[in-house]
Image 1: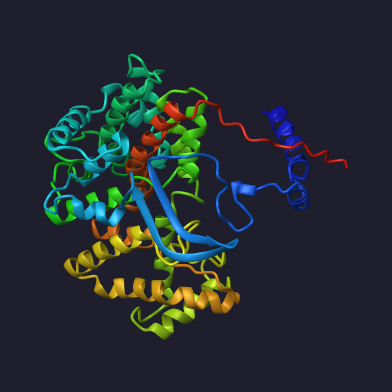
Image 2: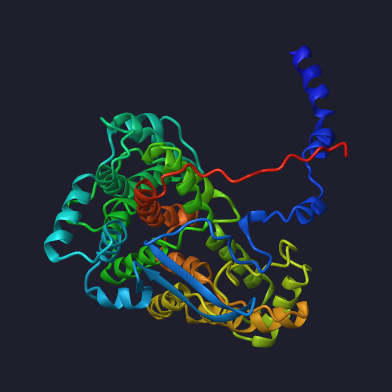
Length: 440
């Protein structure tokens, strides 16, 4: 033990050396015109691929300048708002309909939809080995870690896990999607509630209904709650090929790896705080604002505190207003427009109008305050994460599974892009990295 302590002391002296030898001077990025983060100088993404799956548009480029526009999100060429309005309003299977569209490339006929749903629901239950050895045997309070581990473990119960046949991957996609509600709810219940007896939904329940049934240990959700959550899943199902987790999907798929390893890598990306946990950050920030603003409906009091947030004087002193702004969207995020309607409906039903008023003041006033303090013309607006945490909280969903819910929905998009890469990519993704001699 004494020898180990001595060796640890020696290793501790290397901290500054490690940092020094692995930090590249930013001037070299400029000198060699490196597109850090695969971004162009104007902030737009470097064109790295083509896709039929979806399109994300937040600006027009006119004479080299970015012109802000209201955001447009299309799934297989269909605007997201039109798609949701196309689906029957009294059903809770919008997510399943959306998954069929993204995976197959067209809207399902009734017969196709019924076959898709039946196949999905028949593959919902988790193997007992996964429950016993992974969820219970290796518990973790980080449910994203649990989700990643469980999906990796599913490789071992697949008779042909390494197949890259597109149709086989289509079927595997449905099977994995079906199991994710079980993985999330069982992992949460065991880690946070010490529950070891898990319920299983019946084969008629949709993804949204089954999720609530398992999370609430056999209690069915109301029609309103299930319907709103179903729409939330649709909004998070897909968002273009350039976001970090979907690009990860492309990269790993291009190597010829299996679907389980690919999805585990995508989940690892989404787990990162710069990608998938924004709605949790919004909720934490809102809690801080509530604690420091006495009247949530007083615009002057709220905007004064927002100014302090942007000036890095309060909260985490990052200067960020979480849930405002987006890498692509400028004037509006079409998903935020839709989820705001769900927030309004829930606020009225759950008697939380005053709290929603606080959200609305922040959403309406922050863009103007931001421009004034930063002396900037940058256009920002609420993104989907700004209202989703409020909606989930109204639905009594614990914050520990907000990001796993994001993953549950986005898995469909990842799988759609994987199938596309198998058929169209044809080359392993390998960008260039230039060696820089640290001694020169």
